Image (tube, rainbow, N blue to C red; front, side):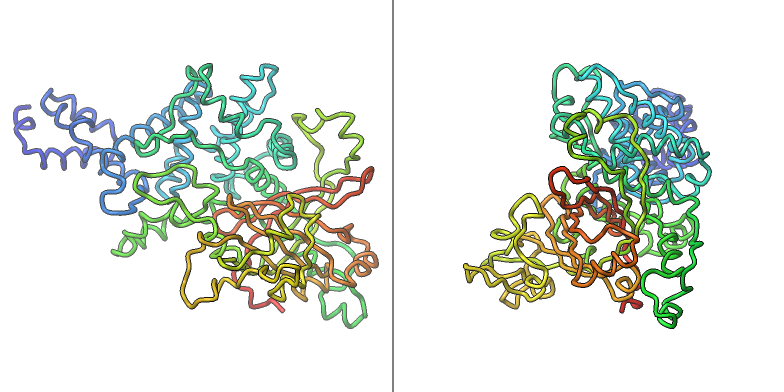
Amino acid sequence: MASLATLPTDILEQVAIIASSQSLVDLLHLMLTCRSVHDQLSIAYNPHVYASISRQIFDVPFLHQGVPPDSAIAAELIQRLRLFRRIRRGDLSVQALPEALWTAYGLVLEGGSLNASHLAAAGFPAFIEEVLRTYSARTDDRNQREARMACRNLATWLLALTITRDDIVRMSEEAREELLGILRPLAVDKDEISSKSVKHVFDSTRAETSFSHVAFYSQLQIPRPECPPVSSAAITLCFALRQTNVPRCALDLPADRAAAIATQQSGPTVEDYNAMASYRTPLFAETLPSTCSVQRAEGTAAGATASHTRGFQQHHDPCLTRLHVPYTQPPSVYSYIQNNLQGLWEGALLISPLILPDTIERSPSSRSDATSPDFISHHPMQCSLSVRLCYSPTLPVTWGHMSDEDPFKWDVAHQTLCAGAYNGSDSRQKIAHKSESPSQFNTWRHPDQALDCLIIGQTTEEHADAWGAYNFYGRVKRDGKIVMRREPVLGAILFVLKNSWDTAFDSRIFEGYLHYGNSWVGTWRSCIAPGSPAFKGIFSMRKRENPASQK
């Protein structure tokens, strides 16, 4: 024992790191040899050892030299070990549950194969599913309901961020239907309690006994972080759970476009239906590098650096980045949109059962039932988008003609936006400059300096031949929410009515968020007159990696 106590500190640290490489229990045994060794290897006296251990176990983001510092990494290690203990015990009690879920949230968003493997080994997928089921049960106590809703929303996001196709395939049909029953109300309807109300629960004195402070790499998160819009996570899961066994087209249609032209038929072909059936909504777990690729990359110096810049830096999603590391800058919304939203997007939309407005007025509580009916129809969606930022001194057209909160009241046409100028009463009102030339000067300006962000797009000829042609225009708000209006192109109404496959000849509004760079999900609604059926639903789109086939 005396030989261990007399070892130089740097050698003792290396012994501790090597001892913990197999199991942290070995480190505990080492610390229990004598008081001197225990004191030298305590986390308060020697956080460097625990920071080194954490870098071996987890994919710790290495943003700058010394950021986060070793003391912060050591503190985060303790929180993560407590999280894994809770998962293995299956502890679903509300005591400190939000803190544990936020620790898991930060661990998941950092990405990397090490983090994913530890979560899987601890049984996190089954644990978070059980949290979602438990905290989705309704309760009559309003205070308790708000607290449970906060846990439910965060659990929904954690499930959406960690679930894989293999996990879904392994689920029984009954388990999938149970999850869909929980998720559908979250996907279509707004939460009955706003995020401010949920945040009030955490800040109120009556909840202090159940909810402790949230810390990330020892940085106290003040104000307490709010969960991203739960509808995005619910929509992603609804699409993914429904895409396990999608039937192929069995209709008597032309095989492809060439056969349709030869027989003088319009509308979708078997090839078009099969392409729609093959669509898969993007999952966050799909964006993470595989274990083999990470191990090969980390064999090089560049790969070692890259292994610590995944996660938050890789996806740079402002909507998901709710935990902040000291000395780092939060991501820029407009930079993120400019870098990721431009391009060709393809996906699908689902239509909810028709609900008459007078029915909603008679039974407002029906919007918040624990379950809701399944979607009744599935249709393809596509748009090729460009992003335009408006900088001073040019006034954005949105200020005068797209400022109304209801996009159906926007009084500017798609053709006007594409032309690049608005011929309104105020000659200073010009459309936003294209993103490649952000100002009238030949100097680059940061997207955060833009006054507004517009999006303009249309369907391709390939999609128009099958499903009809549409124009799109809208704007991106400062919080990252994308609001887009879809209008049928002249002649598309007759095309749709002739083929009678959709009710898409009306104007529709799409509202949603762009997540982890390649998943655009949200809700849509149609313009309705009083007393008319309220068409609405959800949509999911992914970016085509190689738009070379665009016509």
